Image 1 (cartoon, protein in one colour):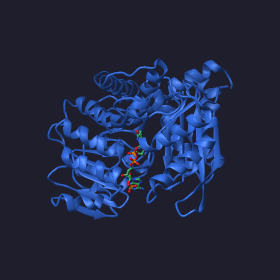
Image 2 (cartoon, helix red, strand yellow):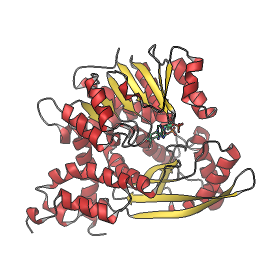
Image 3 (tube, protein in one colour):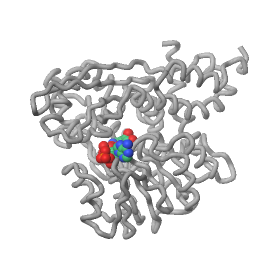
Image 4 (cartoon, protein in one colour):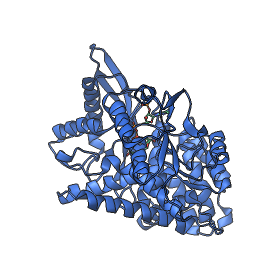
Length: 451
Ligand code: NDP
């Protein structure tokens, strides 16, 4: 059959929409990848005839389950849990667990789909998965969180394993929650194995896993700036979020000589024109993670700052921007504002924080723009290294891991250039990341035949 006889991009996307009704985030993620892959596949008959993209855009399986737990007042609460195992062509499924009221099957399918390409980009043998629950940890006691995590794992344990599927943390799931889930896994299976990453250092965790996503996003940003013979010294940065990824991105920007102007949470953003120093970042980490406070309280501790309720920080003029909170937090109009204000580079710490309009705006303006699947891959990369250390039953040193993280981020940057160089000094990092990630997974799938 001639290549031209195959369904075109629009026809393909019609099918995706029809098969996934009411799943806008998943459709959006597939669209973003399909736009580049259709162009790449134009003269590659085998990818078409073997329906490779169609197969990657259909998760291997979606497990959905009930999670019952008892709150401190003795009420029985019922939540929904999921694990989406998208693709294991190049290694065991790997991807985080998210606890947030906005979690739906659509959100987890989009994240598992993106994760498949991201994990391929790291060069490590990991497939793509994602899981979570609509459980809201905010306002819950530690005991309630523990009971929820135990109940969640009581079902999840039968679907995961060190060589099957290795979850990690994500929004609402940090070291404490991983501890509760690992404890329950071990209790049920009597098996001490590397079934989760993001573990504590005393029980199989890896150094720099906590910092890796934020640090990696800044290393990627530095790699992009280097293509223009620039670095971060003296550059102003606007960052959204105030969780794990945002605070560590801020920390690395400061270490590399930049000035961080903003952080945010779901209540609004703070703008500190004096710069958010390491001391202030430490305060935010303590305040948000351990005291579970709100970012607006920053202005009481540091009166040089202002709080902007219900707003995102994209209107603050800056040299570089790092969206590090959540999906679709940077819309088309925000992207236009950033470009108009002279922002030269955007490195996504979050997954799909920029909507399709925003992506098109950045591409059109030809600024340095890294999609999360490339720039935030540092976290899963160090998770992959945690898996290797668990298999070998040893721990690598911090400086070894820092160097590996830097090398992996540079390797991803090189892959983006290989497939995204558009000539005239412009690199389309979205296209580069999509094609490099797709090709690796697709070629493995071709080797396996129709399975
Ligand atoms: P955390 O739970 O540590 O922090 C999330 C932050 O985002 C909080 O500041 C939270 O504010 C804010 N936030 C959540 N929802 C919204 C919203 N609707 N509007 C505005 N702010 C919001 O999560 P992480 O830092 O781990 O994750 C952040 C992003 O990075 C996610 O997209 C995640 O998928 C991605 N990521 C994380 C990795 C990791 O290693 N942790 C790896 C790769 C990607 P509030 O406190 O008010 O809820």
